[in-house]
Length: 220
Image (cartoon, rainbow, N blue to C red):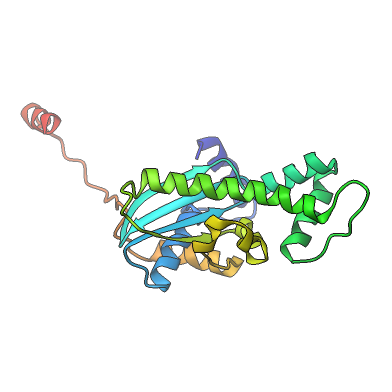
Protein backbone atom coordinates (compact mmCIF):
# COMPACT_ATOMS: atom_id res chain seq x y z
CA UNK A 1 0.00 0.00 0.00
CA UNK A 2 1.17 3.59 -0.55
CA UNK A 3 2.42 5.20 2.67
CA UNK A 4 -0.15 7.98 2.31
CA UNK A 5 -3.00 5.44 2.34
CA UNK A 6 -1.62 3.67 5.42
CA UNK A 7 -1.10 6.94 7.31
CA UNK A 8 -4.62 8.06 6.38
CA UNK A 9 -6.16 4.92 7.89
CA UNK A 10 -3.91 5.11 10.93
CA UNK A 11 -5.02 8.69 11.57
CA UNK A 12 -8.70 7.75 11.29
CA UNK A 13 -8.30 5.05 13.95
CA UNK A 14 -5.93 7.20 16.04
CA UNK A 15 -8.70 9.80 16.42
CA UNK A 16 -10.71 7.06 18.16
CA UNK A 17 -7.74 6.11 20.36
CA UNK A 18 -7.06 2.92 18.39
CA UNK A 19 -3.54 2.00 17.24
CA UNK A 20 -3.00 -0.22 14.19
CA UNK A 21 -0.16 -2.70 14.61
CA UNK A 22 -0.75 -4.82 11.50
CA UNK A 23 -2.41 -4.46 8.10
CA UNK A 24 -3.27 -7.69 6.30
CA UNK A 25 -4.74 -8.73 2.96
CA UNK A 26 -8.22 -10.09 3.75
CA UNK A 27 -8.23 -12.28 0.62
CA UNK A 28 -4.99 -13.93 1.69
CA UNK A 29 -6.10 -14.30 5.32
CA UNK A 30 -9.37 -15.96 4.27
CA UNK A 31 -7.64 -18.37 1.91
CA UNK A 32 -5.19 -19.50 4.61
CA UNK A 33 -8.03 -19.99 7.08
CA UNK A 34 -10.27 -21.90 4.66
CA UNK A 35 -7.38 -24.09 3.54
CA UNK A 36 -6.62 -25.00 7.14
CA UNK A 37 -10.23 -25.54 8.26
CA UNK A 38 -11.10 -27.65 5.19
CA UNK A 39 -7.79 -29.55 5.43
CA UNK A 40 -7.00 -28.84 1.78
CA UNK A 41 -3.85 -30.29 0.21
CA UNK A 42 -2.39 -30.42 -3.29
CA UNK A 43 -3.02 -27.64 -5.80
CA UNK A 44 -5.66 -25.27 -4.47
CA UNK A 45 -6.72 -21.80 -5.63
CA UNK A 46 -9.07 -19.19 -4.20
CA UNK A 47 -10.84 -16.52 -6.26
CA UNK A 48 -12.07 -13.65 -4.10
CA UNK A 49 -14.46 -11.38 -6.01
CA UNK A 50 -14.57 -8.09 -4.12
CA UNK A 51 -15.97 -4.60 -4.71
CA UNK A 52 -13.57 -3.26 -7.32
CA UNK A 53 -10.97 -6.04 -7.61
CA UNK A 54 -10.66 -9.81 -7.76
CA UNK A 55 -7.81 -11.65 -6.02
CA UNK A 56 -6.42 -15.05 -6.96
CA UNK A 57 -4.39 -16.92 -4.32
CA UNK A 58 -2.87 -20.33 -5.11
CA UNK A 59 -1.24 -22.93 -2.88
CA UNK A 60 0.57 -26.22 -3.32
CA UNK A 61 0.05 -27.95 0.02
CA UNK A 62 1.38 -25.39 2.54
CA UNK A 63 3.39 -23.40 0.01
CA UNK A 64 2.04 -20.12 -1.35
CA UNK A 65 2.49 -20.35 -5.13
CA UNK A 66 1.11 -17.01 -6.30
CA UNK A 67 -1.08 -14.04 -5.40
CA UNK A 68 -2.47 -11.93 -8.22
CA UNK A 69 -5.23 -9.32 -8.58
CA UNK A 70 -7.51 -8.08 -11.37
CA UNK A 71 -8.97 -4.54 -11.37
CA UNK A 72 -12.49 -5.93 -11.85
CA UNK A 73 -15.08 -6.72 -9.18
CA UNK A 74 -18.75 -6.73 -8.24
CA UNK A 75 -19.01 -2.95 -8.62
CA UNK A 76 -18.31 -3.31 -12.33
CA UNK A 77 -21.53 -5.32 -12.66
CA UNK A 78 -23.37 -2.43 -11.01
CA UNK A 79 -21.75 0.03 -13.44
CA UNK A 80 -22.62 -2.19 -16.43
CA UNK A 81 -26.28 -2.31 -15.42
CA UNK A 82 -26.29 1.44 -14.82
CA UNK A 83 -24.76 2.25 -18.21
CA UNK A 84 -26.77 -0.16 -20.36
CA UNK A 85 -30.15 0.40 -18.65
CA UNK A 86 -29.51 4.14 -18.21
CA UNK A 87 -30.28 4.15 -14.48
CA UNK A 88 -28.32 5.68 -11.60
CA UNK A 89 -25.85 3.58 -9.59
CA UNK A 90 -28.17 3.32 -6.58
CA UNK A 91 -30.98 1.78 -8.64
CA UNK A 92 -28.48 -0.39 -10.50
CA UNK A 93 -27.13 -1.79 -7.21
CA UNK A 94 -30.70 -2.53 -6.05
CA UNK A 95 -31.39 -4.43 -9.27
CA UNK A 96 -28.21 -6.47 -8.83
CA UNK A 97 -28.96 -7.30 -5.18
CA UNK A 98 -32.53 -8.35 -6.04
CA UNK A 99 -31.11 -10.64 -8.69
CA UNK A 100 -28.69 -12.20 -6.19
CA UNK A 101 -31.62 -12.87 -3.85
CA UNK A 102 -33.44 -14.64 -6.70
CA UNK A 103 -36.17 -12.04 -6.74
CA UNK A 104 -37.94 -11.29 -9.99
CA UNK A 105 -37.41 -7.80 -11.34
CA UNK A 106 -40.61 -6.32 -12.70
CA UNK A 107 -40.27 -5.69 -16.42
CA UNK A 108 -40.78 -2.18 -17.68
CA UNK A 109 -40.56 -0.35 -20.97
CA UNK A 110 -36.79 0.07 -20.74
CA UNK A 111 -35.47 -3.33 -19.67
CA UNK A 112 -36.43 -6.93 -18.98
CA UNK A 113 -35.22 -9.74 -16.75
CA UNK A 114 -33.56 -11.38 -19.72
CA UNK A 115 -31.55 -8.25 -20.47
CA UNK A 116 -30.38 -7.94 -16.87
CA UNK A 117 -29.29 -11.58 -16.85
CA UNK A 118 -27.24 -11.10 -20.03
CA UNK A 119 -25.48 -8.08 -18.53
CA UNK A 120 -24.57 -9.91 -15.32
CA UNK A 121 -23.56 -13.13 -17.07
CA UNK A 122 -21.24 -11.30 -19.47
CA UNK A 123 -19.29 -9.63 -16.66
CA UNK A 124 -19.18 -12.71 -14.38
CA UNK A 125 -17.89 -14.86 -17.26
CA UNK A 126 -15.17 -12.30 -17.96
CA UNK A 127 -14.06 -12.23 -14.31
CA UNK A 128 -13.94 -16.02 -14.03
CA UNK A 129 -12.16 -16.52 -17.36
CA UNK A 130 -9.47 -13.93 -16.55
CA UNK A 131 -9.05 -15.39 -13.05
CA UNK A 132 -8.61 -18.97 -14.29
CA UNK A 133 -6.21 -17.73 -16.98
CA UNK A 134 -4.12 -15.97 -14.32
CA UNK A 135 -4.06 -19.09 -12.12
CA UNK A 136 -2.97 -21.40 -14.93
CA UNK A 137 -0.28 -19.03 -16.21
CA UNK A 138 1.14 -17.95 -12.84
CA UNK A 139 0.57 -20.98 -10.65
CA UNK A 140 -0.01 -24.27 -12.42
CA UNK A 141 1.37 -23.86 -15.93
CA UNK A 142 1.50 -27.57 -16.78
CA UNK A 143 -1.61 -28.73 -18.63
CA UNK A 144 -1.53 -31.92 -16.56
CA UNK A 145 -1.64 -29.99 -13.28
CA UNK A 146 -5.12 -30.30 -11.85
CA UNK A 147 -6.28 -27.89 -9.17
CA UNK A 148 -9.39 -27.12 -7.17
CA UNK A 149 -10.87 -23.62 -7.21
CA UNK A 150 -12.91 -22.03 -4.41
CA UNK A 151 -14.91 -18.82 -4.78
CA UNK A 152 -15.22 -16.25 -1.98
CA UNK A 153 -16.29 -12.63 -1.64
CA UNK A 154 -19.61 -10.81 -2.05
CA UNK A 155 -19.23 -10.84 -5.83
CA UNK A 156 -19.40 -14.64 -5.90
CA UNK A 157 -22.82 -14.74 -4.20
CA UNK A 158 -24.55 -14.16 -7.50
CA UNK A 159 -23.46 -17.67 -8.59
CA UNK A 160 -25.51 -19.24 -5.79
CA UNK A 161 -28.65 -19.00 -7.88
CA UNK A 162 -29.51 -20.12 -11.40
CA UNK A 163 -26.55 -18.23 -12.90
CA UNK A 164 -24.15 -20.99 -11.85
CA UNK A 165 -25.85 -23.41 -14.23
CA UNK A 166 -25.59 -20.95 -17.12
CA UNK A 167 -21.81 -20.54 -16.92
CA UNK A 168 -19.94 -23.69 -17.95
CA UNK A 169 -16.70 -22.66 -16.25
CA UNK A 170 -18.43 -22.18 -12.88
CA UNK A 171 -19.72 -25.74 -12.56
CA UNK A 172 -16.35 -26.96 -11.26
CA UNK A 173 -16.00 -24.11 -8.77
CA UNK A 174 -16.85 -24.48 -5.08
CA UNK A 175 -18.53 -21.44 -3.51
CA UNK A 176 -17.65 -20.63 0.11
CA UNK A 177 -19.98 -18.34 2.01
CA UNK A 178 -18.24 -15.30 3.47
CA UNK A 179 -19.43 -13.57 6.62
CA UNK A 180 -17.98 -10.61 8.50
CA UNK A 181 -17.35 -12.95 11.42
CA UNK A 182 -15.35 -15.37 9.24
CA UNK A 183 -13.26 -12.55 7.78
CA UNK A 184 -12.41 -11.13 11.23
CA UNK A 185 -11.55 -14.58 12.59
CA UNK A 186 -9.34 -15.24 9.56
CA UNK A 187 -7.37 -12.08 10.27
CA UNK A 188 -7.07 -12.98 13.95
CA UNK A 189 -5.85 -16.51 13.19
CA UNK A 190 -3.33 -15.21 10.67
CA UNK A 191 -1.90 -12.80 13.22
CA UNK A 192 -1.66 -15.43 15.94
CA UNK A 193 -0.46 -18.41 13.94
CA UNK A 194 2.84 -19.32 12.33
CA UNK A 195 2.38 -19.82 8.59
CA UNK A 196 4.98 -21.86 6.76
CA UNK A 197 4.64 -19.82 3.56
CA UNK A 198 5.49 -16.52 5.24
CA UNK A 199 8.83 -14.91 5.88
CA UNK A 200 9.46 -13.98 9.51
CA UNK A 201 11.72 -10.98 10.05
CA UNK A 202 13.84 -11.31 13.18
CA UNK A 203 15.49 -8.14 14.46
CA UNK A 204 19.27 -8.47 14.88
CA UNK A 205 21.50 -6.46 17.15
CA UNK A 206 23.78 -4.31 15.03
CA UNK A 207 27.46 -5.08 15.56
CA UNK A 208 30.19 -2.85 14.24
CA UNK A 209 31.92 -4.62 11.36
CA UNK A 210 35.46 -4.27 10.09
CA UNK A 211 36.40 -3.55 6.47
CA UNK A 212 37.15 -7.17 5.45
CA UNK A 213 34.02 -8.44 7.20
CA UNK A 214 31.90 -5.93 5.28
CA UNK A 215 33.61 -6.99 2.04
CA UNK A 216 32.92 -10.67 2.81
CA UNK A 217 29.19 -10.05 3.41
CA UNK A 218 28.96 -7.88 0.29
CA UNK A 219 30.24 -10.60 -2.06
CA UNK A 220 28.44 -13.33 -0.14
